[in-house]
Amino acid sequence: MRTGLSPWHFNCNYYRNLPFSSIFLDGTKVGVAGGVSFIEMFFFGCLSAELQPSRILVIGNAFGLSTVLLSVLNPNAKVVTIDAGTEGVDNSEGNKLTERIAREEGLNLTVVLGFSPQAVPDTVQKHLDGKVDLFFIDGLHTEAQQALDFEACWKFGNNKSVYIFHDVLNFKMKSCFDRICREHPDMHHAILWRTVSGIGVLYPPTLNESVIAIIKLFTEPDPLIEKTHREIKVERFMTWTGAKYLRRLLPESLIRSLRKRLYG
Image (cartoon, rainbow, N blue to C red; front, side, top):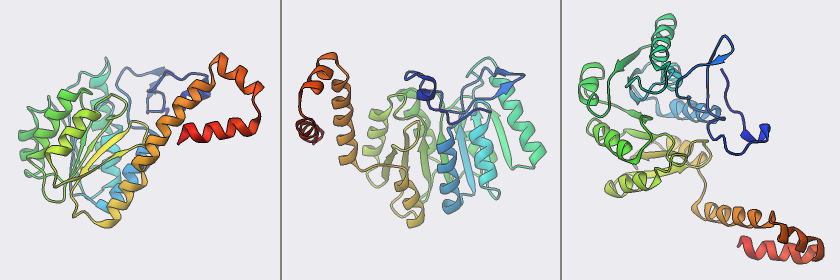
């Protein structure tokens, strides 16, 4: 398996999926959607240790990394994943791999072939007793589908349920995530800027403080995000030919002063 690589290590700044996890067979990359990144595995490890959910629903399985990971991290939980089998030519083999690992390792894990949101009600009733403590929404990455997946999941949550949305930032689904948060003002929310995909989290305010501390560990304060946006614009400007020429002419003290003003 390959995971956690920065595109910049390969003089490349456009391969946004490289940090995520991929599997290989006989040296060839398997044709299935990528799995969670290394830092996101760390996030789930920290979260699971404090949250200790009993029933977990995953929407979107691919080759099963997140599903197996959540099952291993939560040995006392029942984990169910719904997968449509449409993410790559080897998606069906990925589901089979997930099932084989579950059998060999004795994991309490079930793979359900089906489409969300249609398959959610029957799956939750049949395999999770109609209740879910932790949702990981990682299906088709469109705003419309994200909303449909969440609406289906919301009906089976409780006052302690946590909803995790993968790839909110990377696939430009933040406006939909923000709308979901506005429609549920009694819930708290966060964007995990320190994760590779820009995970979104919706959680109840009554959540244990230790769990909330884990969520906060993986995000950034809004003012710092705004400063970072400005910093990126300044750094991009400084790479222009005219800016490079001015940097050679101006005193270093003046350049530092200008940077400070531009960064805010």
